[in-house]
Length: 439
Image 1 (tube, rainbow, N blue to C red):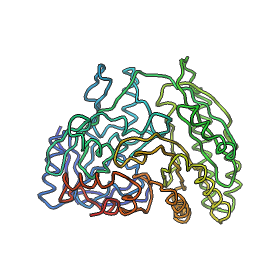
Image 2: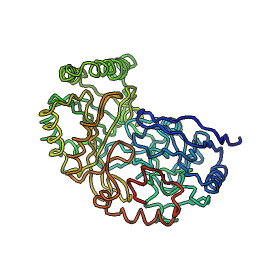
Image 3: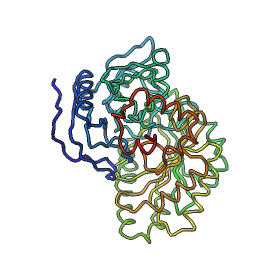
Image 4: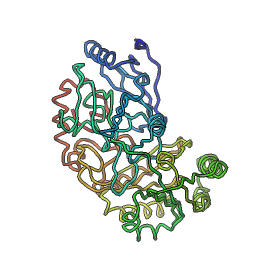
């Protein structure tokens, strides 16, 4: 199948609706060779190059007014190596498609984020993560990467081959090249039992270390303007499977968590004074439940209510203080926050620009309904997060720059030096990378 590269292009918007761009040219290559040729041609024509996946980043990390590469034809599994327990997948493959295909093969990723609409390359390049005591982000599960570099060559990297590139490119921000294939570690398909339970915020914070240590995966949502949370504990199970019933799943995951919640957001946006009351009602709407199913059906959930998000990783030991400060800020302000705050964890890893690089981390994600002013809330939250040496998610709203990142990432200089070597002319540059990585 030939490339659908075109000299004309329409306007592209991200899922959150807060980034709009009109590239000069689009390319939809059907092979790695076609992608490499498109990169070389763009360089000759003086165009910058960025790849864009499903658009689930809230930053302009994939935006360009040059050549926008769409990877939707670079999809599917290339190879499953059952001896090495790895799967190699094309970069444009949506995580949902990968998860379903792996399950059919009796395989699974070890850990996942909470949605699966992103492409594998977009998710890993921005540091997408779930929650886990020992199991880390999607990028930490990568065993090999293939990418097209600025001169149009195809580079393979792993712990043994080009290890200095591997150490950085697993979360490469699109700054080192265009990822074309990823090899993930996988394991035999297993079962998880999820236990969801309302709990007071005071109790969660007081018992957080115990809740974290006793569960393979622990997370919770705090509802601003209340002292309430909804907790979720995921642990491996011997079975048997006991999935959420179809009717119960529809009622709680679709009707309440999406339909009614969406209506509450619309009401809060129209009449901000009702937000605290709506928050108190929302925080008590879901009851305790348990279910057992295959991993992607437990880790992920449908998110149909549009929002804008900021998320920071702080040292895990700083979580309680950080969240108490955020609550105090909301309580004493006139902010009206109608979206729950999500809290997750990840163990330290060895990836240069991972938000968990060299430190055990806790993630605090703040959201606002799309179309609702979010700047005051996010500014206040970011002030608290940065006071604790927080590291923002690369694909979510933040205002930090290269000077800040050089202070909070011990291997920041290693990454920028590699970028100087792989892309000295900044073919993959855009305004976002100029801000977060410097010239």
